[in-house]
Image (cartoon, rainbow over the protein chains, first blue to last red):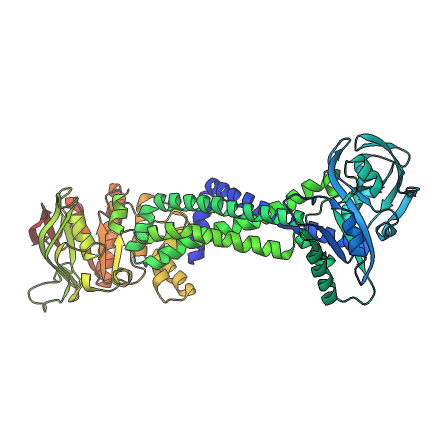
Length: 373
Length: 243
């Protein structure tokens, strides 16, 4: 008989309480692992998007917490594109908005004839004829979610647009988006002369160090703007920052809930087992072994809650993917680091929660414990 | 032929002292309840003593003092000449020197009989295999070879107490302390448990102290110590042939 045998049986014998405690921890851990997966999914998606376009630098306003940065003058685009080592640039005005039956979809507009359009692969229909045509291109996922085909009309920005083509993109963000020319977007959204991103492409031969210099130069010239290399843009984006902030908040909340839940369970368990602990002390168990037993029980609850939380995270992801509006636009990429972090975190929460009950149990005098019966 | 239960015959050499209390006092509830009021008691190696007395007389407190479960307010409790309150680790003393049997058995409900017997051995350096073998051997000795893998809920009261007795013997203690060991048992189980304790005492030469308020149980011992109002009221050998 090992100490482990007693620990696992103590938890198994009070099944309902153990199950409820595990559920309490698991829900918190599920939220952590899912949010981390969401942040990672967004970052990878954003990377894919910029790679697909061949963009080296993204310029936008410094984040104010909104997922889509605030607009600024398109003059900035012209000034930046005149800098040395900039081969090409394109202004972008993107918004998240409800469209027809969808509560939220990305509508993005690109400077007409900029390099950004080049990567789109039209699989049905055609491109807009010019930068003024009131027609939209739909990403493949967007066309499925909106149930629109080439030739259909679409209510957008308060007027009717026609669907002129459907494109494929390796970027999931773009695949779930609606694309229109920049000028059309500006005139239909009270944003005349405004953009909220500039995409830049370097001249051949510009290395990372030089790229950083260019970014620094842009930020010096235009205070309030942030210029990020494509490889870092995702991490610096306000959406990724927002999800990470949310993850931190949920992590802290889960810690409090987990601590309270496990500590409550272990205190109840210690109270119920007062006589049992007294007997163990009477027959020679050292206080340290009692502490270890209670701590192990709490830690086992933490680990099990973590494992259950990770499994629930995968389950939630699959459930989310059942909704086409989500599966076509959002990826929850639960990586090894998210799993390891969640398991370590839940283990630490379990162990910390067990500290006080363990100390209380180990200080119990056998004679006092016997009077408890 | 002399009665084997009366080892401290005058013709035999004086046995050495195993445990001793010297002017031990103990009170509870800020002195309002005085459980022991200066108890002097000497227990010799191989003794079989019954501590009797009415409820609240202090007999269980005295047993707890002898087993190192509690410490006196004043006076000394000695074990083989060593003062218990001066011992650095009373847990080790209890684990190695003392075996406890309780009225309510106090077996761990989640463990099997064999695992319960192994619980005190967790603190011993014995390898696990040997602990298992010893537990099985002890259960056989108390007549529970068929109940090794049963949990306490699957055993009768008498069987549970026999498991508890096997557990108390796990670390081969010098002193076996039994607090009302038959208090929760029927007549048949009482006889079985007392005969078992008597046999253990006789065969192992183990010092045995039991607390009881039942005269027929006390009659199994060689000596009766009666506690009254926190003091030793009477300390006399039992007549031979009882019960």
